[in-house]
Length: 180
Image (cartoon, rainbow, N blue to C red; front, side, top):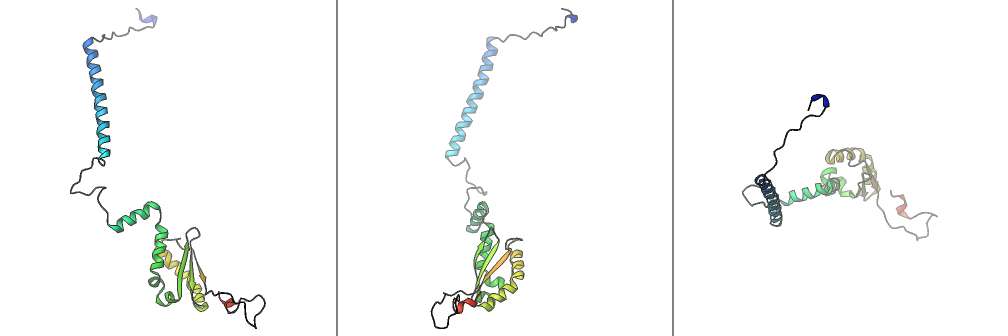
């Protein structure tokens, strides 16, 4: 054929003989058997615990100290902020001082609003804590991380309303109406 006709000659591919076909089939069978064996080995190792052997070096199966296990659980669940605030409630006297801690007790923390609620045993201590609130928010944020506490709500003492007595003004709740 000529080059002008545009068709090029195809190189002749030698035809596979029976021995060559047998080699190809044997190689494919060996690869399949190897894959099946590897899959069976992985299944067996998974049943035995991942095929890890115990040894002198640390691996994922070693027991953890209690503190490390709790810290890992807290970080996995995303409980860092509530745990830190809970720590503040436990360390309240060290954070605010003994005088203030004897009269003002943290009650709750709203994580969505970043608000710490504190109950005081008298109106004088509630007023004192309201005056100290900006410094206390700054101290708590330095300890817990910026933005953890945005506001401190201070409540004075609460008593049951007194609806009895001769000298009671309309709308009054008794001696407790001046608290807060």
